Length: 360
Ligand code: UD1
Image (cartoon, rainbow, N blue to C red):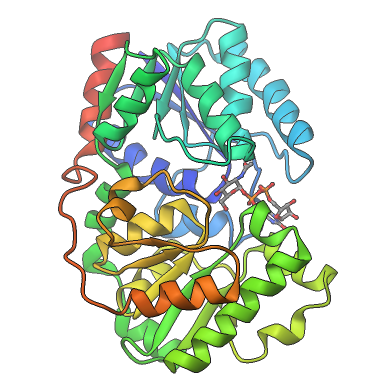
């Protein structure tokens, strides 16, 4: 049995790392790894291969950055050739990026079955590129792995019932595996921080950073939070956000923050574990903060991780100073942590077993 797996963006390297390791440990199948190259800076790509011991990809498409159509089309063109030559039993894709959709479209047209890990997430706005990518990928997939029952319900509401499994979150598998290796003390020293004296903030969504007014409002909000709560703001800058800040001439708004390059997995987890709380528009970090017992202010109109907002653990905030400050103050009040929202950290085994049963 041969399964091809497609990665290309930061969160996909993380998810592949744990599944890849389990496939190697169990000798589950002949695994072909393809990297689209959607993310290519060292801090966005190679760092994850190094620190999470991902093997060198069998194929690299080198698509780089471009418009949505350019990226998706480049992935399709590259993937069609590889799939025709390699003839895998199925193509596995993760999440909701342009790489995910490009791979799924190429595979579907030449009748290669698609396996979608992190299926069934739905969130507004429907026009968000990731929402388009995940809906279409789910529609094309024949095996769909959801992090929770909510994903299964979302799929059922759209008539997708066959091949759906609740596997739990594969990112929890990795988090548990890596927990003994997080160097919190070393990271606090590196950035001259102390426990609970800072907030980890990350921003990269197009609707938050591409509009200069919204971007400026979010940075103003972070500054008000810094002053009012007396916390430092640790802000690793995604390259997209760094560019938009430069284009909008907003560099001065960063003056009081602790700015870093994008952080690797090990650094970000270690720093999140010692933060007071998190402010983010990253889907992955919302969950990782929860695994660290930390709460998040989510700068999004909606989230796919509803278990965390419905329980009051995470709070949604609008990209406006008042809303960000109000949520950050509210998050300092006590809240009971919801338990086991995304499985028990054995998603990789569930995924491997279901794939074996279907394709062997
Ligand atoms: C993409 C995914 C998003 C995911 C995120 C994780 C899509 C539509 N979105 O968003 O779901 O949460 O990855 O980070 O696929 N850039 C660099 N160097 C890099 C990568 C990007 O400079 O290594 C810059 C380029 O200017 C690029 C921009 O960042 O145009 C945006 O990159 P892109 O991959 O299109 O989207 P992300 O915002 O990273």
